[in-house]
Length: 355
Image 1 (tube, one colour):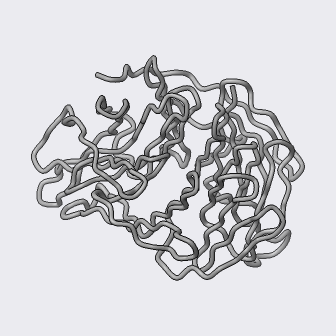
Image 2 (spheres, helix red, strand yellow):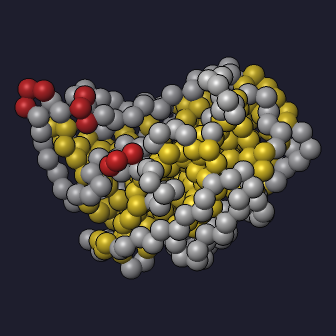
């Protein structure tokens, strides 16, 4: 086995929410640093300089009016509302303080340090966006596996790259679900797969066999995280197999992969089970954080490090459950940020983990 599974107690750190509240996450633990009633947060990105951008919505003070698009900026100071691009932002990514990108349903925009430059989006639903070096990638129309109806399921997505002012569809040897650095995760012909960007094309990477094999088994790597200093690659995904008789429902487990080009290894874990929406970010120390849905409307995490795998749950405001919707790391550091909302939808939550 590549990893050794361990369980760890999670220390809770919660700050009462207010628009002006700014708390510092305790060192080495996840903590709630912002909890704002009437808000709901969908996306986060962190620039190399440490600016944290958060997109979501805010409901009016009174009545049942429609929620309005919201953009917050903080991280180096208290979170405050800033001017947005004029549409509801569903995805964020950034390469610097003057290269922040926001994607909505029909428009996208770039922040150049002074203003938003807004353009029409004429393609599919943007599920993931990545500003990596000079490249800007989007994964659109990606489907999600369902254990209840997995029979005949086939992965699909479209990868686009901004070339000049044109979003060009990019051919890939795998169905891409996540990207980090020069690496893409996904599947090929129903099997978990990785691909690597050569600078001109994506090339499939040889992987070892998954340690367990069952009849009609399918698998996928939903996301990948690359350590910027060591180049260590960590990916998370799932394996599933029919177990429901005539109904063809599926059973499954969590799939983890880690290593370097030419030396990868898999581990299969019974917990937390099939997690087709799991997201990964590098931890800045050669490992990765993985966030996944948990029971009761909350979110859990796996911390994959050199000494094993630590599991836990994200803390929540008092007497409430809160779920993570997006995760982002500050490049070159061990700071990681997460955003989401309480299960009742009455409060937006921002978490941070610093060392």
